Image 1 (spheres, rainbow, N blue to C red):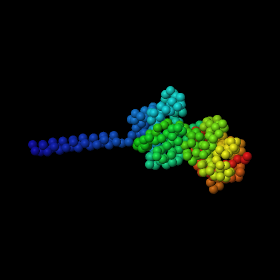
Image 2 (image 1 turned 90 degrees about the vertical axis):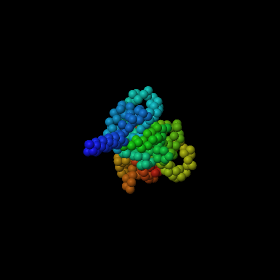
Image 3 (image 1 turned 180 degrees about the horizontal axis):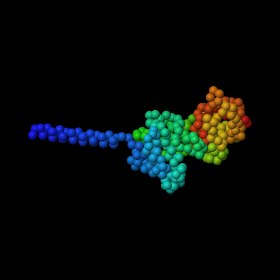
Image 4 (image 1 turned 90 degrees about the horizontal axis):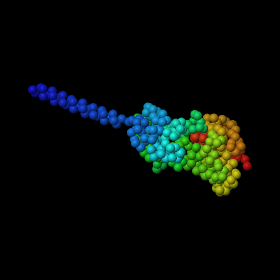
Length: 325
């Protein structure tokens, strides 16, 4: 009898061990990260995103292996997007357009909040300006992480960061991030505040509206930084934008724009003569770095390249270009 009791105790102990082990396995399995698409499905506040992904046939992509970063708009963000664009519901959004908007929320690298830095990154979206260069996103990291200048500029702010997934990371945002125009990107980057002020200083010119639209697009814009404008005012003796005659300011701004071409930095050649929107030329130089020699024989360095917008591309320069007057 003693032998039978010992064997019975051993059997019960083994069963208990196996039960605990199985429960632990179940717990470990439930704690394993899910895919981005699966996490979105489990979050009731992201149901509109899930429906949009399904409509655009992108659900499979975010279920597959990879290292994605997804900025996930909430249901409230989608509702505001539909209202702002005059859509009755998600079904009313053209599928092709919806797909590009959704791809504009996705990076192909995993970027956690601690690794986010102020600057440009590339999304998976494509606008009408280029079939090869994907849309740029401007991220500003301050007290909050702001994308493309925030909701008032067609962007968003991160409200919940670092939701880990097996194929990347999710950051929940408070807006649907639209495909940025030249003007959207200029507004988003605080290094271009003077340029934005110049573009909007004379509303009668309609110049800011032109660079926000598609007429005469795509545009290539060589965009002077704030520092470039400060040096320009000192050099020319103008006390500020208000002191510059309207016709001179408009011609100067147009001298920084090429119409009908989305010219990437790789297409620039040494000695290339560029005809601008002002019907005047400048010359590209590549010796010792990319630069521009303007009509006044002044040299400006190209300091940032290939900021892709939906209606063109921006290259930042460190001097305001001077046309002939």
